[in-house]
Amino acid sequence: MEADMAERALTPLDGYFPIPAAYFGMVLGIIGMGSAWRFAAAHWALPAVAGECLMALGVAVWLVLTCVFIYKWLFRRAAALAEVRDPIQCCFISLFPATTMLVGVAVAPYARPPAFWLIVLGTVGQLAFAAYRSAGLWRGRHTPEATTPGVYLPTVASNLISAIALGSLGYGHWGFLFLGAGIFSWLSLEPVILARLRTLGELPKPVRPTIGIQLAPPLVACTAYLSVNGGVADIFAQVLFGYGLLQLIFLARLLVWTFEQPFSPSFWSFSFGISALSASALRFLAHDPNSPIALLSWPIFIFSNLVIGLLIIGTLIRILQGRFLLPRPRPAGGPAA
Image: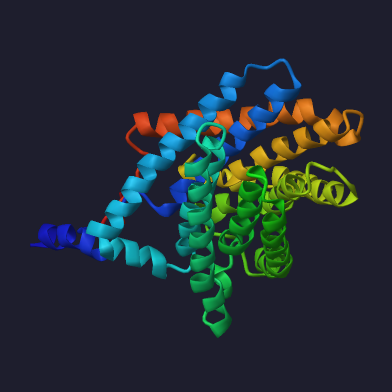
């Protein structure tokens, strides 16, 4: 009888699903690094095929996760709704439209019309979800404990990615609209998130890797700004990049604290900021090869590749060990796993 009750407690009806929307974060890092490789191949004697392989890998991962995401909404509705209602995990749903736009960037050199529609659909999708999620917080129902760096995703990351994607197609005048939306959303959210991190106790260990998202806003904003302004690395771009470097130093200080748990796919939270670090540095190189940031572009590029490579290796190890999927929750009062 007790075994039957425990089994029922772990059925799909309770909202469990082994692949959360947060896994789309892998696509952010892989395609982001692929974009950096495209810039590197254009300015250094590096093989362009490396960047295209990363782009292909990112698109393949996106296709698999998209099929899983659609399956979840069609056949595991309880799990999908549970994710929407979760105050922390719901923010990661915005990664689906965000990565859809990045897939558009990846395929644009080969098929512009499909790329255009992927970017348009992703932009509409991210705006719709931001209106649902972020505007809904204005009703005063959000708890301080649920305020993690993941809150940046629906409005900050998604709008900045819209700017990058539109800029890549030559629609910089539209991209500026989303750049403004992303930057001002970032400026409004950062004081709240930092106050929570400083004063409301430590993040739980499973949530700690999301602090890597803190690296992304200034560096993705820098990449977006350079995407929509024609690649002019002016003072504003340097200011954004400088603040991104400061966040990198802070996160390096917290590495031991962050890694107080085994590697998991949640560590991909660091990937988009890391890839944007490299991509934006390479854009500085294209604008002025003698600028201080351009001189750092080579070591930054090596560092970014090492980080993304380690994330890919760590994920492959988890897959081979059979530990890639989200573990089933234990029934209340059940034995430890």
